[in-house]
Every structure is written in C-alpha cells, then in structure tokens.
Length: 194
Image (cartoon, rainbow, N blue to C red; front, top):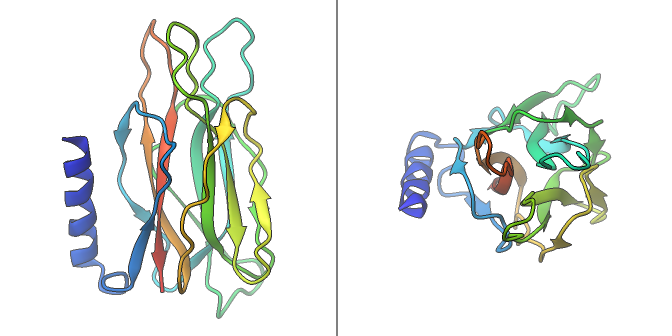
C-alpha cells in the first residue's frame, strides 16, 4: 500500500512539473531500510542540479538508542551561472536527532548516482537502518562519502543519471517510537533532471 502511494505521488509530481516530465528518472537502491513513511519529493529550482550534500547524523549513543543517519540535504547550483558560490538547499523528511555535517562538493560537477550503507534488522537489538551515503560525480566519476556511521554494509550503486544530474530527493523516515527502537532515516530515492 505504501508503494502504491509512492507511485501516485511520483505521477502527480511529474504531471505538474513540465521541466521534469518526460526527461526524468528515479534513482533507487535495493538495500534501504523497511521502517517509516516516505516524505514529499523535494526539487531543486528549475535549471539547478545538486552539486553537494550534507548529512544529519546522530553519533554513537553508547548504551542509548542509536539512529545514525537522520537526514540528507542537497546543495543545488545553476551550472550555467555558478557565481560567488550561490546555491539553494532542499531536503525531504528529516529525523529529529543529530547534527548537520560539513558540505561535500563535486568540484564544478553534479551528483549523478549513489549507494547506501544500511544495517539490516537486528531483531531484539538496536536498529539504525541507513547509516551513510556515497555519491558519484559527473565528469571524472569522483566519489564522495558522507560523514555518517559505519554500521551495516554498502549496497550496490544506483543507476546513473543518463543525462543531466540529480535534482531532487525523497526520504523514508521513521518517526519517534517513544520507548521503542528509533531508526530515523531508512531509505532515499533521487530524481534526475535533464
């Protein structure tokens, strides 16, 4: 049922965004966490592409409840007019814990694919779900690794934006569980724009 809602929201998004429609593609990976709800797809302004990112990360809590990755923020630039470092930021749903890390930039390029580091379900243990992310850059193919945590393992790379670059994101975040086990950010998908 959640997957159907996600598909409907994507079709609605494409129907009212003509600069995206017909020239877009979703980038997804198969190892995302299973908990939480999908937030809204958030897009860079028209003609802007993601050239950098930062993460909201909660550090290790010792005996406390770890959540690790709580949010992903894209830094969008106009590739034809990137003067004086002008950018805008977008983010989808974000968990409540942690701090934002410094920005990592693709030098004069854009983000075009990604992979997630995810810890699988721990049964009765402390679940964290998504822990970190890596992006590849257009041009040289340089890889940027986020400042997340090291639990879990890296999944496969998503497909690459065939033309253009990443221009939006949608995150799956589990809300606070009270006395239960919090995981925060579980999964993400990105949108390519040409």
